Length: 430
Image 1: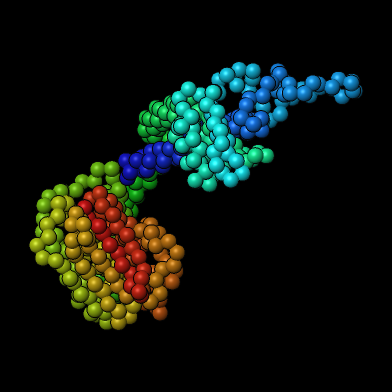
Image 2 (image 1 turned 180 degrees about the vertical axis):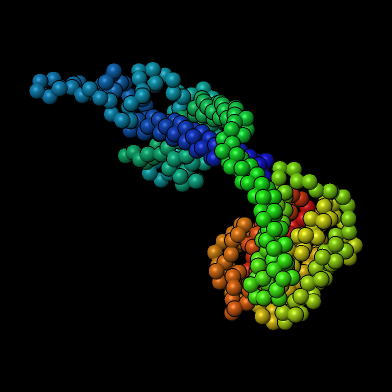
């Protein structure tokens, strides 16, 4: 159980860390890609606005196309660049490689300008322009070039900008961030594994104290119970047995049964329970363990059917598996509806890797809420797992906890579900 708790802690922490890593790396790269594309689009807009040319910029980011008017000294000069010019300088026009395609009002290409790029000829520029016109898109990416279209007095202008450098930078940033993120993730996971024992230490100590208390209390209670039992027998020898002595003996039997199951549960929940693992015929074991309950079911007006596939073999503790079958079958007989039906089945799963033990009973009013709580020790559902119509259901609310511990000690799973008026417990034995 401790190992399972530690593994669960490590897995949950690792998954949470992985989600955070994805969010951080994805966010950083998303912002980087968005900002790079935005800068490229701003450049394209500037070129389109200036009819396929780069304007001259002063240090304040303003055009030199018109002389500045300083006649109004009361208006201070702008000290902030326009948003679309921010991040650009005098060298930007020489660093940007682009070509321009012009069309007339009919969509026919009239002119191309490839003077600002060396990798594209005029004929190639025309082909690029035609592909954009045929697509009908106003912006996007074509090969190594990001393009955008604009309207002019004579037709359209399509500007293509070489983005190979930007793409290489984005890819490099993505790879570096992923590599750093992966290294950090592995390092943190190793630290989580190393310190996980310390993190769950309070839970481990509490569990160990609880288990030790159950063991110590079990042995301590046995002595007074034995004395009470002996005194009761003496009273019955001196005088006739009466309802009080019978009640005392019944309660002693009940407490002895509870102590036995508590000690059995504590043993099963040990990190390495003392099980004798060997190959055995599980078909015979299940049939032998379930058969005695046929008579018990009949005395209660219920019907028990056993459907076991022949010749199935399993590697595990035969005694523990027989106890598992007894617990589930007794539970089904106890809580089945009046005149109800109980079924015990053993079969090979669809994938052929597991042996499934299924125990079901009719149940018109199944437990409500989370059915996994049925495996909690001392848990009872008020509606269907308690006394009803004056019938004493008995039990201690601990049998299914023992069944779960047995299944887990075999590294397998047990589950329950309510459907079509049936309560079904399934142990998937691996």
